[in-house]
Length: 321
Ligand code: CP
Image (cartoon, rainbow, N blue to C red; front, side, top):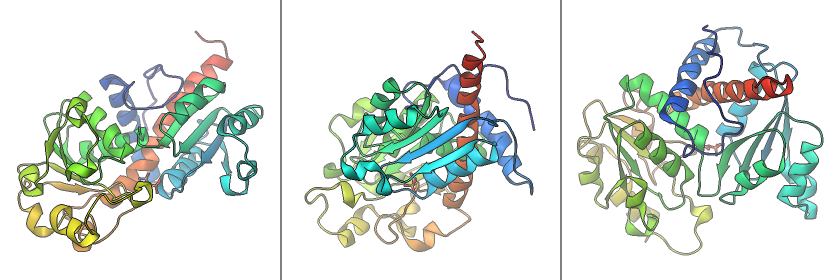
């Protein structure tokens, strides 16, 4: 395994893709590539984060992000604590900031936060004196998801530039879509969003994405087809006529997939609604679907960002400029 370069990542927090440069993104992905190899070995433990404390604070449910941050921290030797919000004093009315300040007083070095409000993680980062990593905030950003998606694409396609990437489905409620649009634009790929008008945010074109309402037209010539979950839990009201009608028009199936390039890959951040946004057989078709690979890349990417941020923390403690 390569030694990481001395200072490739000059950030205290990872709050969004928006504030990263293409060089930052490349540095994270290059380091994550090393960790993919390490994670495939029988012995996966290093002491890179030995002596550092990582707290995972998830105010919303998670399987992939929470588990992979926990594994990433443990494989790098950190002391990892998973804060159970359901059994914490949050249930007695303690606020996000008071909860964070309480944990901050215990001197963690890395705080991983998922929260339902857009901007909540940025606010929290201003209050604590450890590194904060955004594990998804409201509809705003999910930076490590976009990074693991980028790593998956780069390993499959050999590059991140000059690709046509279609992001399809519930764009309106999706922090995954926003982070991916930022990242793919920075890396000079073309992004198309495909959705019914009710599931698109106002001004989406200004994000740097071409808009399609017809899925067949939107998928024409695409290298990557990224499907999104219909986020029913964030919908107050009726955004689609029915899930059956939605699948008919916007669900990925064999017939609609014919418009994409022959070697196009199928992605989904999970969790999936099989038969709603994606046909179950396509999701499981390992000749095209890279959904399992995305999960694998998630651990490696989170190891890379933990390492890069922790290096700045340890330099700060040691008084290195
Ligand atoms: N993709 C993603 O964020 O999944 P989880 O909600 O399971 O973490």
